[in-house]
Image 1 (cartoon, rainbow, N blue to C red):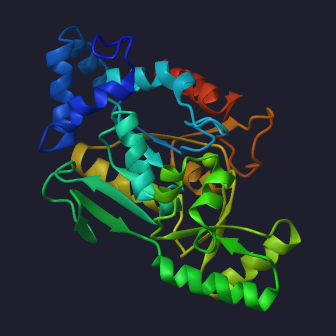
Image 2: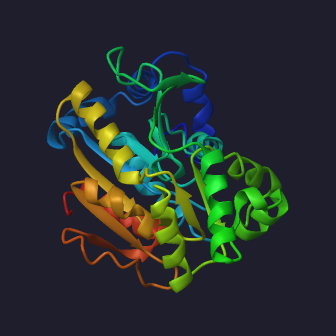
Length: 319
Ligand SMILES: [Mg+2]
């Protein structure tokens, strides 16, 4: 769609954005105006029509295909968002290092939410100097919502000892096992193991999972269920982090309209916070049970195919 991506893909556009210093959002806008002047007017129209739309998205099983992690089917919708200057915010159970890898792959310059809402990372200068953060780290302002990983590890060990369930978290697994369970390379699995706010675990489903949830609650923690793992988290959730970023957008840029896309139960709190909640289907054609969300849009297809259709529909005013 853009001449600098044609035949080479979004991946190769990444260095273009990342070679710059200073506020990322500004450079993205500048990149647009220099590369494709004819988009400038269209962009202004879009800004006016779609008063500051912001799109939040889960990654695994949603923007990325469940088994292959491909975003290729979503490309037309990704390019349409880029063209319209609409921020796309990753909101995932992945770690910061994994999410940064996907941001580079997709040339994404926007804030992102990691580890099921454990923290939100905002590129320096993105919301101007007035924005307040819990800490600054590695070129980001960081909003922290979760409890430290060491607390979660201790809690998981206590729940395992008390319940006798065969619970195993990432902290109990070698990198090779994480790689095998996720279909990752060893390098990607090493990034997934660098956890700060969320412990993915296996070893409990159905009634056993309910027992873990009860024990977690007693310790002031919660359990969120994603496409592959259950996650022990320190009272944070995706919705809380989405709310915080939405507030930063509206404070710095005026009122925003939000959309959110997910595939699993751990996305429900995110979907409850947005104006247009979208659930993509699972690879078998079914979808997660979110009966309590009346405005929910169910995408026609699974993963990135459903994502593409829902986002293009949103941009064409169908949602
Ligand atoms: Mg997912």
